[in-house]
Length: 156
Image (cartoon, rainbow, N blue to C red; front, top):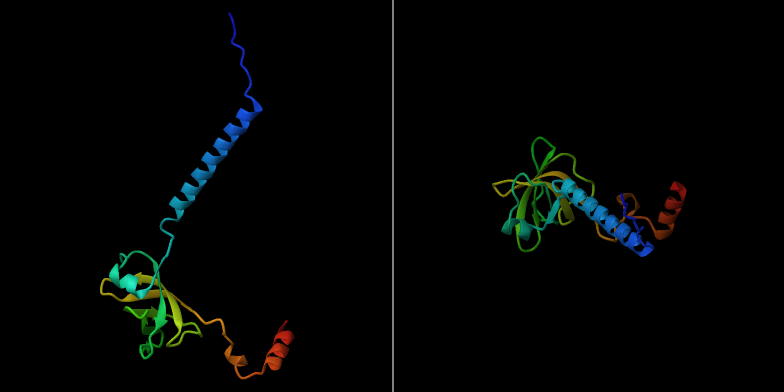
């Protein structure tokens, strides 16, 4: 009985096989991660986009824009807040039940996380108030630069 002699792979071919195997594993891991996160993604919309093509009511989305002046209303229960988010092209009414962030005021930017209802109202589960790059805490608004630096040094 004659046995066929096996010739080992050359080093060049071994590296090629290893590289192809690593690429297959990386692509598989990326596809698995994308599949696992498919329902966790929260899409970001501005009012004109959400009015033009509203997402289905079951999809969690983020709505970003400016809180319109004069639109902020607190309900009688004290925790439900109604306001309008606009982007200059469209307006979306928003309802939020909970404690609003301290930076949340009319005329400021906001990102609301929640779901769009069939009636066109956005029901927010969470509000993220945005501030500009010149933000100064309320406690430090009337301080001079030297006073503010002293307070910062004392709190370190």
